[in-house]
Length: 339
Image 1 (cartoon, rainbow, N blue to C red):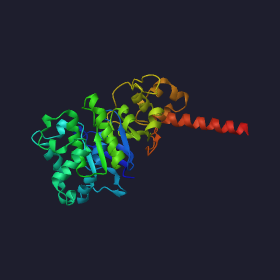
Image 2: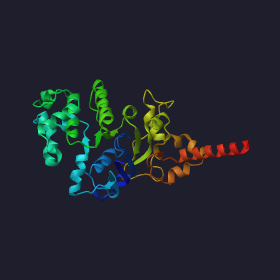
Image 3: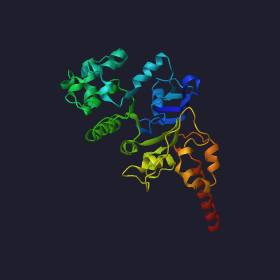
Image 4: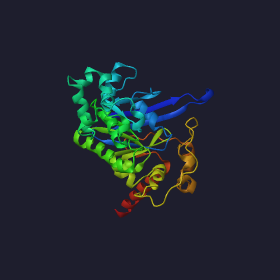
């Protein structure tokens, strides 16, 4: 496994001595080599904090992050070498680029920070040109002396991607990589990420609130709610047959959705300083509100019994487990009767 998080917890102090905010509250997440994984969820669910922890920018309260089978050591020299292998692509290219720096300076910045270890005996200008070309800016020399304000939004995002590629990472972490772009440009950037995976074997963790984007680009999807992964698995499996009520709600608003009717969630996401008992989604869960959970005999469990962490593939939902168990029992009984 290229990147793996195990039982990751990150907390921030509460205001005025109040309860801490459990931003990441037990997460297992894997990014296999050569694959694109989409991390999906509403704003405030903990996606950004999880990403910062995976990048070594936040220190976990407990749990671990492993890269290529070795633990990431926070606060050590090894962290600098790790960051050459895992590069961040920010959401807003305008904010990510210094308006006083040329494209050449913006892309070369990473090389200058990491020095000889990044150049590997090559000329800086050749490495910068190669990265711009890989990001789709050709001929690259034409962009060297241009400034961000002279570029289109799509070109600026390509410069940001080139700045990540210049260090020859094995994994890109893309935080809402097309959210600030026009619809006409989004497809081009997504095709670029897919080409980098297909041609160079580059892996990516794409953070988004848009399940439609995940549908178009990802191999696997992890759905996050209030600090935890609630459903995870192959993209076709999750998006064609979503199990968790939260995943179904996110998916129901897409034009290509397989969910019959739009699911409207009531209230705002809960406060991470006051995570509910039992299933953390239960105060907003349409299955519980409709009485389906009570009919399955799990409504009390939904409100009081916590769920195990989702790892690799699975769903954290008492109702889904009960329905699956009932179906398995019925199949067993049918097979017994037939024999």
